[in-house]
Amino acid sequence: MTDWLPPEALVALALSLRVSLWATVLSLPFGVAVAWLLARRRFPGHGVLNGLVHLPLILPPVVTGYLLLIAFGRRGVIGQWLHEVLGLTLAFRWTGAVLAAAVMAFPLLVRAIRLSFEAVDPKLEEAAATLGASRLAVFATVTLPLILPGVLAGAVLAFAKAMGEFGATITFVANIPGETQTLPTAIYTFLQVPGGDATALRLVLLSVLVAMAALGLSEWLARRVARRVRGL
Image (cartoon, rainbow, N blue to C red; front, top):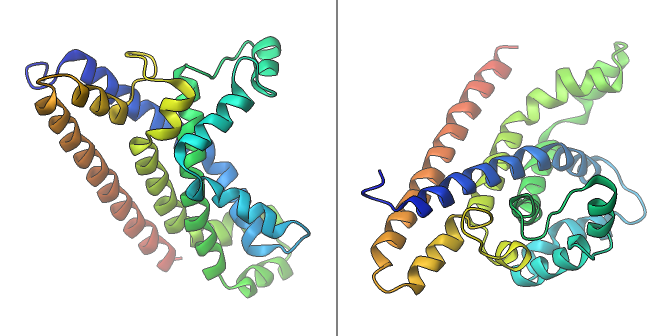
C-alpha cells in the first residue's frame, strides 16, 4: 500500500475515517432530538431553530470555520472555558476537525431524520400510548423502528459530508500533517506540490471508494431494517 500511497496520505485517510466516524456518532443523538422537535412540535422560535440548523448549508464553509474559531478557539467564548475548566482544546487539533465536520454535516442528518418522522403516522404512536405505554416506550418500540431507515440514511449522508469537508476544517484547525490533515486537505496539499497530481488522483479514487462502500452498507442495513419492521 505504501508503494501506491505515501505514508502521509495513509495517515490522512485514517484521520479522515476517524474524524467522520466520531462526527457522525456524536451528532446522531442531537440530530434525532432536533429532527423530532422540528417535525412534531410547534413553538416560538421554531423557524429560528430550523434556520440555524440549516445555516451551514447556506454560509460559505470558510465563514462557518471562522465562526467556530471565534467561539471554540483558545480565546473564544466557549473554547476558553473548555480549555481552562476541562483542559480540552479544539482549535488546531483533530478534535476540532470532528466539530467542524459535525457542524457541516448536521443539516443533512437532521433533514433525513425529520422526513422520516413526518412520514410516521402519529395515530400509531397515539394507539400505543392509549395501551399504557410511556412516551419513551412508544418511541423505542414504535417510532424508532419506523424511522430507522431515515436515521441510517442521515448517518450515511453525515459521514459522507464529513469525509469531504474542507473549508470549515482548514479554517478552524488548519492543515497540520498527522494532526488535522484530512483526506480533502491532503488532496489540496498534493495538488500544490510538483509531481503530486498522481497521489492526489489516488486519494480522490479512495474517497469515491469509501463513499460508495458507506452507501452500499447503508442500503444493505436499510433493507434489513425494512424487512424486520414488516415482520413485526
